[in-house]
Image 1 (tube, rainbow, N blue to C red):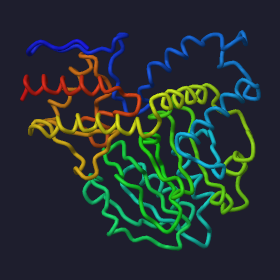
Image 2: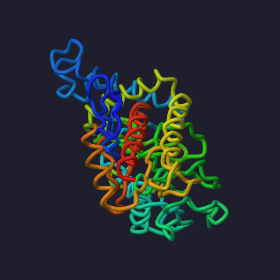
Image 3: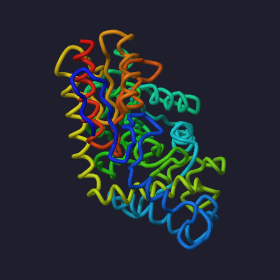
Length: 372
């Protein structure tokens, strides 16, 4: 990493010349994975053709699919009672598919509303049946996670839905919710970033494009006893049982192929304990810099800060626009906050290396020295 001289515009790059990518999604992928994919295109193994062109019924893809599922089971400690599905439609389709399958016509489900995506999930459930808001942080622009003592949970609810990490607002559940009913989690933006307790969940879903792979595949994990509770009848493609039973339709082959490589990369690091420690270091480094002076201001309340999406503001919007532009020139991209809230956002997912955060902190020092 090239270090800047005093007040000269710094330039940051990886050893291979890549910029540091803080995009919220699709997001940075591990460089070793990209290089391996490059090596295997345009000919995969001895097939004489690329992975993009093979049948999803071929032995080669079946091996990739089985390996990816086995790696997920190993990383998360999932038993055979769990179904591992690779679906399409992103988390947005899951917002509808979950209540379609599991919200009984004569029952209810609880939702914790901690951001825009949680709101969307609740809206879809409300469209289908009796969805209840068990708690919400909308009163302070989703800057915090409601204290569990304030939650109004129904012990007879079919499930409790929560969004574990809120990409737009930079908040995250620091611990898993305690509930008498199965948890359903949209884990799209912190999936595989830390250890979880699988037995608390009925279903977990995650769009791959933040922590697991490229856009185009959604990982869905369903515990079998929860699956057996689903409503009937259901549209074939929207019935989780259809996909748990067999490979029903053409999956996103190339996306799953990369997911398998990312999972092997993660296993090689030491699995979830190792990546959790790395993520803790990255977040601590960046938040320490934000808190060091009044020039930068974190937007999430300290007790709810995300270790995946770090949101902050500068004294003026003009300075924020300048920060994004000059950071891009310096080799730091994807730092503009979500259009609905503005400000800055650094997404530091699993594949974002510690060197990227160190470069960002260095640039923040430079920028404050110049404009503060």
